[in-house]
Amino acid sequence: MRFRQLAVALLVGIAAILPAGCGDLVAKAPAGYFSMYITEPEHTLVPGNTTENQGGRILRSLFTALVEFNNDTAEVEYTGVAESITSHDNINWTIKLKPGWTFHNGEPVTAQSYVDAWNYTALSTNAQGSSSFLANVDGFGDLQGDPKNKIPPRATQMRGLHVVDDVTFTVRLNTPFAIYPMTLGYTAFLPLPKAFFRDPAKFGVHPIGNGPFKADGDWVRGVGFTLSRYDQYVGPKKAKSKGLIWRVYTEGLTAYTDMQAGALDIQLDLPDSAYENARAEFGSAFLERPRPDITSLGFPMYDPRYGDVRVRQAISMAIDREAITQVIFSGTRTPATSYASAVVYGYRKGACGKLCELHVDEANKLLDDAHFDRSKPIELWYSSSSTGALSWVQAIGNQLQSNLKVPYVLKSLPWSQFLPLQDSKGMTGPFRSGWVMDYPSIYNFLESLYGTVALPPAGSNYVFYSNPAFDQLLRQGNNEPTVELATKAYQKAEDLLFKDLPAAPLFYEVNQAVHSKRVSNVKISIQDCIEYADVEVVQ
Image (tube, rainbow, N blue to C red; front, side, top):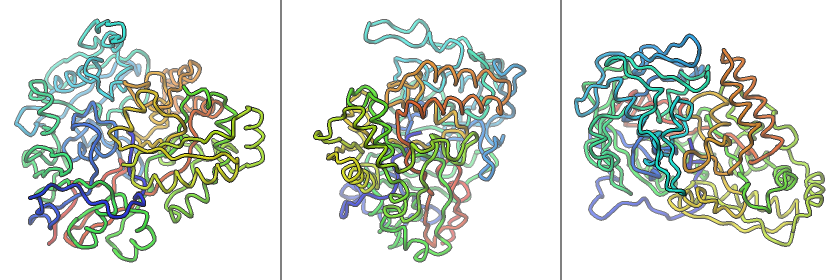
């Protein structure tokens, strides 16, 4: 899942977007409720089209997935809707649901709720950003049309999905996939009520989930909305508060000021100006844990200037990751040495080798050998909505200018314009790329960002990397009978990725959060969000 929160941008004086007459939103939350910091999601709140972490965080307060993950071990836990997920061959899967689950409008959560949702997400005419997560289901290809040639999809339902009864459905995959149960903890696989299909647009601003909190009204852009406890929730993690208020800010500095003033209860993702003092200022109300993420510098593989792998290698080896993590981020980042997060299964420390280390002389030789035009500036792209991106992207520009004697230009756009430009091959130079795990396997970081199946608009392969050998190694892993053997093949795919270097791994983040004295029992989840249901309001 793409993420936008890294640290706060060095943009002082940007206020939260709050329309006139909504001053109550910057006051303390009502009794029994707590307020949460968020920035504007990319899209409306439809699970199949939510591929970035701001929308994902909101969805996790409204929905409960089939499976969840242990916060300490990352192992799959059946604390969600699924009673069991079983297979005898890793191709044919039977998913049994626990009875009694309902949506917030009273509709029962059934096997049909999942089958209908997955078919909707997979159908290309619905243009859902998470559709690639269903590409391994038998019949997915029939749901993919060709809009350029005006060829419609051949089907609207995947033949690999079959409802057995209200609490049982089966999934037939194209090939074996040993880690399949693990993937089902992602938001792309959430259920949808019948009400969604009657009016998807209405649902997007007033989502009807099956989680511990329900929406009290519509999502208002630039403002947010209020959720209240869903008293009919049957999951084990019932809400301990009356509700929560999602409060939209344009960036984190204003939110942190509200935290200091006691007007905001929880902020996950702190401004860089707060890194050194937040622990002392908030004491036991300061939290941190390793984040299941990676930040990279993506290369536009469609741009001839970056088509030579030696150019990409040179840029990567001209970056001093250690200096950036220490100077810019005060040690709250760790230099990346893999394409995967350090907390997921299959991660190998040092897999990147010298490509992720500073080797200025070798970098310059590579650039010379590639006949790179050093007189033309390198354009470095980032989203102005990505808090903190300006500081480290500028630091990389300064390093490239100093180490390679190549000038640079910073290019930025708001998130709403940056993503469509990525989709349309509009990056004219290296760009900021971020990913937070959807499920704790190295496969999630490889296939989602670099697999051919994840090319836009179906996925998040914004570097537009496509290598049949890489795809084949991923498929080979999927065909293995066990998670352990599958992971070995995925690691071979990662080795090939380092040979091609479509992106330069940069650093991993440490999640930091602070909370007010009004709340207690605040915990950061392994899934890059707060454990919302556990939060208690004590004042």
